[in-house]
View 1 (cartoon, rainbow, N blue to C red):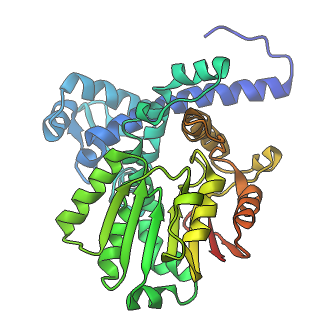
View 2: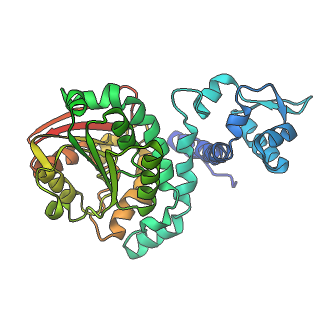
View 3: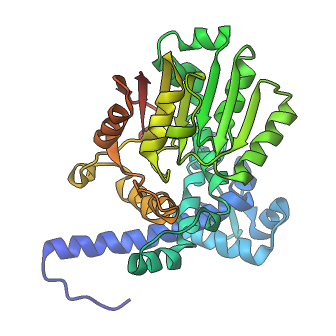
Amino acid sequence: MCDIAITTPDQASFESRLVQALNQSGMLLLTSIGHRTGLFEALAGQPPLTSQALAERSGLQERYVREWLGGMVAAEVVETEPETATYWLPDERAELLTDAGPANLAIYSQFISLLGGVEDDVVRCFREGGGVPYSRYPRFQEVMASDSGQTVLPALFDAILPLAPGLIERLEDGIRVLDCACGRGRALLSMAERFPASRFVGYDLSAEAITWARQAAERAGLDNLTFEVRDLSDFDATAEPGAFELVTTFDGIHDQAQPRRLLAGIHRTLTDDGVYLVQDIHASSHHHRDREHPLGAMLYAVSVSHCMTVSLAQGGEGLGTMWGRERALEYLQEAGFRDIRVHQLEHDIQNDYFVCRP
């Protein structure tokens, strides 16, 4: 790196931040590799291993494993004993990098490489307009399913569904449920198994995600659950009126081509006593209020490189990940919802939860 003549304390501080960010970005790329190759799982709970022993244990090539270990040692993630050339992953770190703990943070490191892969496309869009089509993100549904597996699924029955009083009892008695932009449908799969008297439907634009969801439902023997590939950009006109007592969207509004039309369709398809339960990104609709957001910069990067641009690629609004609570409330009211309650859950710093009634 070239030397920079530092002239002010602010510049010195900013330079330090940039250097740290460069180093941490390298750690995140290596973390993503460690997660995807199973290296963290292979190290967790083990005595110190040589690079050869770790390669054999994980079924990988030793030279790549050795270089990865070097990076993880430099990042102070993996520990090493130089005299024996062995490596180990401390238990307290393994709990944050594997499924052994309450949250596997290595999952989120995948966003860096995933979104970096479309940087050329995004730069072109900055210059020419338009957007990056959904087909350019072959692994996005997989990563998002892992994300929701840590934020939504563990809290679904004990914290999220109870936000709407009486909803659990209605599901037990039997109601009709729709999940829009359902992705791989993991929330629906869990609910359909838990509440066999209710009927569940999932819509998503991704044929790959719907295929995965259908296969999972078939393996689980769930006959109260169906999935359909569906473009929801005209849902305001095509939604069946009064068809569902519960509609959900989990992180599914902000990257829609036509979010206002989808919300209007959700209002249309709810029964008069229905509930719309929304999970979406916790943010403000005003940039200056996102300064203190613990994931603000990261979520704007996700927006620029995925959510906003995917919507624009469909000729959509390009609402973006960080549309914010204020705009969300505006759109929900515009769609016709009059009783809207906003909640946050202690375990989830990333999302707001809206309970909406017609």
